[in-house]
Amino acid sequence: MMQIQIINGPNLNLLGVREPEIYGNFSFEEYFSQLATQYPTIRFSYFQSNIEGEIIDKIHETGMTFDGIILNAGAYTHTSVAIHDAIKAVAAPVIEVHISNVYARESFRHQSLLAAACKGVIAGFGLGSYQLAVEALRMKNEE
Ligand code: DQA
Image 1 (cartoon, helix red, strand yellow):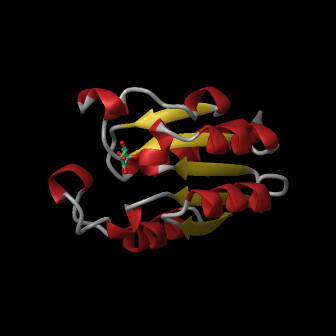
Image 2: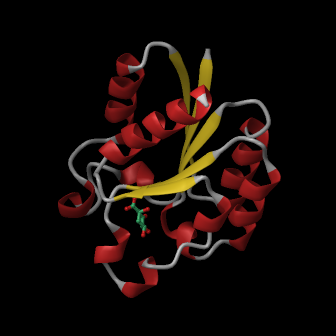
């Protein structure tokens, strides 16, 4: 069974409440259970943390055994060399995702320190960005 780890970074615990005009009205937990129902042959795990080191620990913990990681590192995307290094250190392909189209927003969101270490980047499709990342990992897994 394919195993996928989803990791959400800072402030993403407030999805559904936080800036709903940008991030929507759904909590991630609601979306996560829909996604798991939609892909019964994939085993999903979900982790959220507001703490950089905990995100790095989770990448280490799952990055050698899981088939892929879907990572929305939130604002750490734009600042974290340490998360970049963690992605490089593990074998699993990591897909960077964003709910919003970061390129249509403030210029400080245009740079990702993580993208170059990732398999690819998906941004701007709302929570659908996570499903697109699942599809990317399934394609990758069949290669
Ligand atoms: C985000 C975009 C980031 O710039 C921001 O800091 C977030 C969420 C997104 O999913 O659109 O926290 O990663």
